[in-house]
Amino acid sequence: SQKRALLSTSTGLALCDLGSHEVIELFNDHDFIEFNHDRSRTLIATDDQMQIISTDTGEPIGEPILTSDMPDEDGDFSDLTAAFSPDGQSIVVARDSALLLINLDGDREIRTIGEYLADQRCGLTYTPDGKYIALAVAHGESDSFEFAVRVWDSESHELRFERPIAMEDEDAYIIGLTGSRVVTSGDQSVQSIVFDCQSGQTVGYYPANVTSITLDRRAALIQRDYQQLQVWNVADVIDLDQLPEDIDAALSSAQFAGNGKTIISTQLGMLRFWDAAKGTSLDRMRVPPGTRIRFSPDARWMVTADNRSVQLWDLAERKPIASYAGKQPRCDFHPTRPEFVIVDTDRSVRVVSIQTQQVMHRIDWV
Figure 1 (cartoon, rainbow, N blue to C red):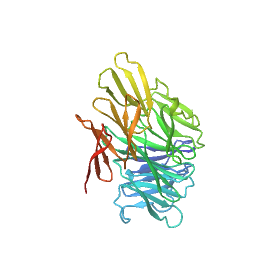
Figure 2: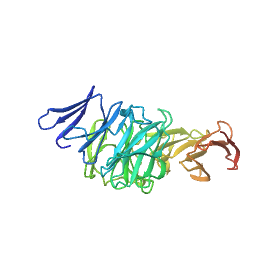
Figure 3: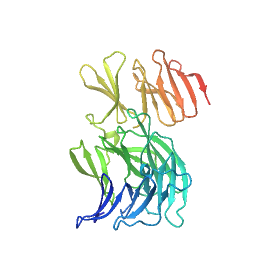
Figure 4: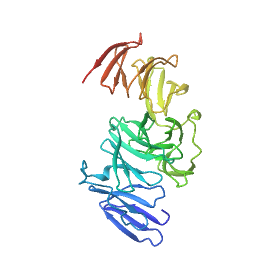
């Protein structure tokens, strides 16, 4: 806040007065979780409990939100992800693959309003308009994470959708931006992706890592290469269609085409084709950011997958030639035969012929 600073130390947290530089309160063995919208209240936690304190005085506000002696709780609350609603009337918590809603009025009822599967929680936020809850998750291994944003309606608690989103940093996080928009970023990100929770679409990006948003939601602090800080107008979202040729975006993948004369790279939702000898750009085509992409060994074919479908592309023609429904599908090509495989979360495997674009085999397991 304007009068207080909360410092993280080797032993816990220290609430300090910015005028006198004195320590108001020490919270040993506590971790910071989240501020409310105006930063008048702070959510902190230990291994045994989660508590709201006054940012001004450091005094606890009410009883602990969660404790290890509650039913179905086993402690370690310092490792959860949580967010206040914009009106401050509730807190949403992502914990043990469940999304919990805690009402702060009355008896502080705790309800499970959703579930998710992920190898890692990256961040949780309400949209500033209070209509949606957005959770960023990562699937996969630490060197090959695939990121997605999962969105619930804050009133009905219905899951609206899950969308893949372009990220290149396993230390990713998500911040409420303006209206129904959120921004995903990370400590090492070279772009921050803006996602609209109402439409379910990626709407643009900022050209650096967003570290924080002002309380009036008008300005963002962005960081470039650990060397430069800039104040960025939140309204100045860069349209993905205006992505310049020389954009310094992290490469997701690159490989030689079958003849070795062409290199195909994927970069922030864009496929780029390069002359391997000259290093010059030949062509580019756009796919939705966060789309999972695999190339055939001869680089003649490509499959793209989002959470609902798979498309087979002819790279010479730069267009899709077949589409297949799927449930969070994962795909890969056979190393020697003109085939690819689709694996769905409904516990099925389909083997598809590239020549006929037909499913050759299907395997279901229990």
